[in-house]
Image 1 (cartoon, rainbow, N blue to C red):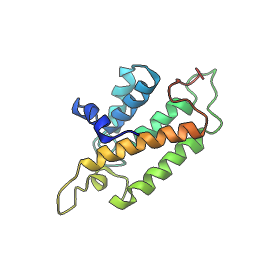
Image 2 (cartoon, rainbow, N blue to C red):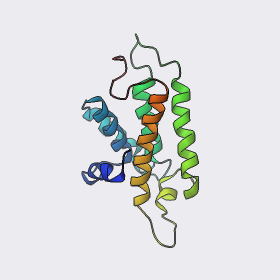
Image 3 (cartoon, helix red, strand yellow):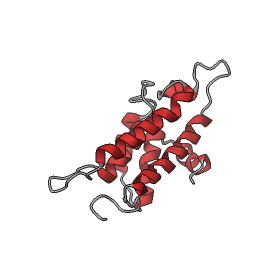
Length: 150
């Protein structure tokens, strides 16, 4: 099981949540892809730093797309691509209901009288990565194999 201690070094090196999600997937595949990691920056802090939908959710959906989506003319999407991504999104929204929604400000508790709690993000990131691995396994997808190599 992934812990927030496993995630902390990524955040400590300056990556946001969506970038951390991509880095975890790339690490699982034994790959590096700085272009993808840079692209994930657009999802940071709730879509372009706007405080919208959390980058863990949007980044997680993108990561699942790495495993199930069509990426070239000669490829077909995994037959269960839509349910795979939907399962994660539904789980995440249910998980974040306790915070009052799936936006960065809600999860951080920016409007909490006791102040924001970034620890929520680390815990949620670790739990989300674990759930992504569970989903992939349930659908017979090996997280260590990039799309098309399984």
